[in-house]
Image (cartoon, rainbow, N blue to C red):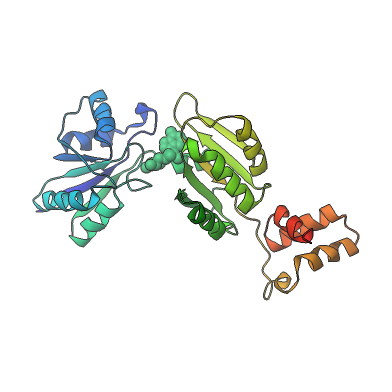
Length: 279
Ligand code: SAM
């Protein structure tokens, strides 16, 4: 009979968040496949668990994946853990689950911390509809294409980011989404210095031009404003200039007209402003 693959969530900072089931499964596993064995050894030592450990990460996932499947098919139970949090969420595990599905090997999860979800629920932004966007690419063009592809999404967006890339990412987000969008920068979840900074993208860019990011961050961003759908959006055939001028002719100041036009079109005020003032 085949063994089972267990995806075990581990703490993202506070060791007290380990679950009783996670400890039980780790204690009975035949093998623990860890993203970073040095970090996992610390966790196992803390809980006095001594089990065979192997590395399973981005760079050995093909060979190691085949090896793990062969063990599972010979009846062994294997646990996958990542550095922190839930495996397969911006972490190794996804491929292994796919391989198990192809090989009729059972997979189960031992639930626990996920940075993105915990950041979302304390962000103060809408939790009714959201999308997890993971890490942006390090490649500038791909990063901007990614942001461009989600800029009209009306649900909340969740991104992971490393501290040394935060400033560039915030600038790119501000350029693409506009400075008025609300953002929550959630750092050091479950740790002593846990913090949520709630502001606009403009304010976040300003803040981090004078302060260095520290710790691990989740960026939660409000979605684009809902556009009222009509039979084909009536503004599609109207240029931004005509759109703003129409409101000015009705008595609005140019600032009000730009704001209202941006809202109608579901784009940022900055985008309308730039287009309106273009030569
Ligand atoms: N699998 C993990 C999970 O369940 O959330 C995420 C792993 S991903 C490689 C690491 C990223 O998660 C970090 O760059 C950061 O964006 C986020 N993260 C992890 N721990 C965090 C924490 N304690 N506070 C804030 N963000 C955290």
